[in-house]
Amino acid sequence: MTYTEIMVRYGELSTKGKNRRRFIGRLQGNVTKALRRFSNLEIRAHRDRLHVILNGEDSQAVMHRLQQIFGIQNFSPSVRVERDMTQVRKMAVKMIKAQYQPGQTFKINTRRSDHHFEMDTNEINADLGGVVLDQIPGIKVQVHHPDITLRVEVRLDGIYLSSETIQGAGGLPVGSAGRGMLMLSGGIDSPVSGYLALKRGVDIQMVHFYSPPYTSAKALAKAKALTAKLAVYGGSIQFIEVPFAHIQEEIKNKVPEGYLMTVQRRLMLRLTDEIRQQRHGLAIFNGESLGQVASQTLESMAAINDVTTTPVLRPVVSLDKNEIIKIAQRINTFDLSILPFEDCCTIFAPPKPKTKPNLMRTRHYEDLIDVAGLMKEALAGIKVTEIKPDDQFLTQDQSEINQLL
Ligand code: ATP
Ligand code: MG
Image (cartoon, rainbow, N blue to C red; front, side):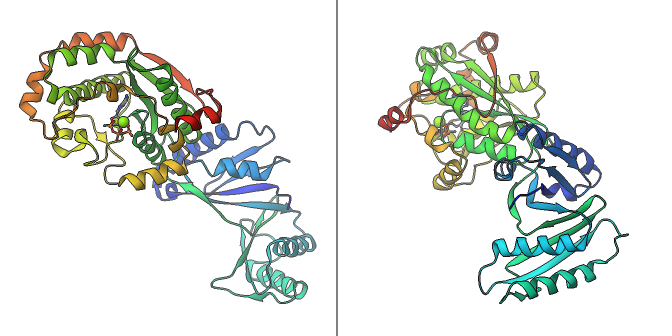
């Protein structure tokens, strides 16, 4: 079937009252950006639909990309014919035949945005229903739960037919909820948190702490490669790398072993919050899941979160590891996340971190290091890269990666 356009239905944004126009504008911008490489497309946003007019572009490739854009409920590949019932009848039969399996049922569902057309919706439904029954032996009408629903839409510029509805990614258009910082490690959880933040419309920027010479260039490349995977959903993403080795050395020298991890995490959060403020973000996201490791008990979260009143949001807080892994596999971050390149926290991880750090002691131990001076130095060493979906960072071929696993 050669389709002429993809008809896109909005997700939750349809219910957002007066913000609706802003949301639709954002979605149109995101769709335009994501489909940029299809140079013949025309994208037109209307109140209740967005029309992607193909002008000869490959409908399958366009639909594959549309499935990765948040704010889309579902979409239907459609064919436009002239406003002439002879042509509509021919196309209706052709579309249903292309899908029909013996024993299936169908229904015609017409809507008119042009009320001047010579037939009304009931007449069109009855006319086309009759033609289909005549020309496809064995097919039956079923109004409530048909196997095939042929949608017919009468518009000023033609009549549009579609027989398939494909689920979109749901969520809200990226950017419609404002900006947030994601604390991105090389692990499994934080990329999944980033995906879930994007899904609710947050424009995320990555903050990644790395510790050369203790951590390798590959660990940094891995975090960037994970960012490229998420950029599929977010357009392009800013990746902010923060040197963390000196801070870790200072903490290791001055803070008792049981509190190393808590104080390290406080410094990470302090730095992320400073970067957030500079970049006009409203919240911080991380990949913490309650009870998963020592730093993720409620006591620990409280002792770490103590450094800021900025909302620290944890999209995977209540998910079990295997639930997180399922999402990671679906969004293609899992295989990268399990590559064994040590990140900065693993290197300086104490053998027995306190699972219930005491808040007063935590504050006291943190005072043993020069927080302001160390932060200033780390912030001066920041490097920012803009990462796009097709950017490559880990150049090894698959066999080398397989050996590592
Ligand atoms: P993940 O799989 O996301 O690494 P994890 O279960 O391994 O999570 P931790 O290593 O304790 O847990 O990290 C908890 C959270 O702290 C991470 O999800 C991430 O948001 C943040 N974090 C940890 N290491 C880094 C890092 N090097 N840079 C930025 N954020 C980090
Ligand atoms: Mg980790």
